[in-house]
Length: 194
Image 1 (cartoon, rainbow, N blue to C red):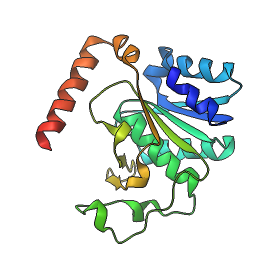
Image 2 (image 1 turned 60 degrees about the horizontal axis):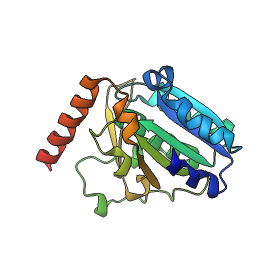
Image 3 (image 1 turned 90 degrees about the vertical axis):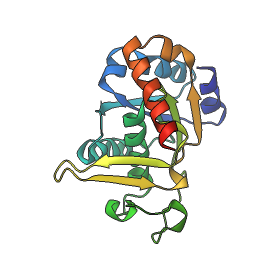
Image 4 (image 1 turned 180 degrees about the vertical axis):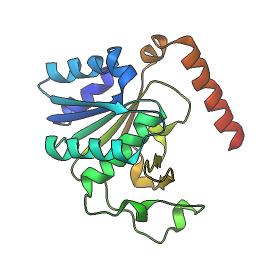
């Protein structure tokens, strides 16, 4: 949590934490909220993210962001909470944006036709990872599934890269061994595919 001092020294006053139910129920979000609240930062936690986040859940989180008005969004977890938080961030920063136009299919991230909107005007994005599988805390990618059609929408733009990534070994030490092992295997698989 020492890295969270930057949130405080940057003058942030309202933090939205995006995570999943498991991490919320097991006190992982409390570790962040306690540090922030002690420094006078108002916090709100959205913990409805599930594996392979859906558009309906992401929109619900974006509605919370629009009503809470955070100046920092903190994604806590593995790839799913990271992806959900990135897309919520886009919807919060640019509610007028048509989501389908942002999705990329088999296209070079540097040669896109659609100009991705500028990010970080309303809120900074911080990613606190609990697993090492996807590396989403340092990548410009996010994927969401449309629950109505089952279609996956990949988003890719350097603007989606979090402003800060926090990798805290203590978070990994407390997770189930099998989850830690699966995350490691996922990371190796991604490295082999690259």
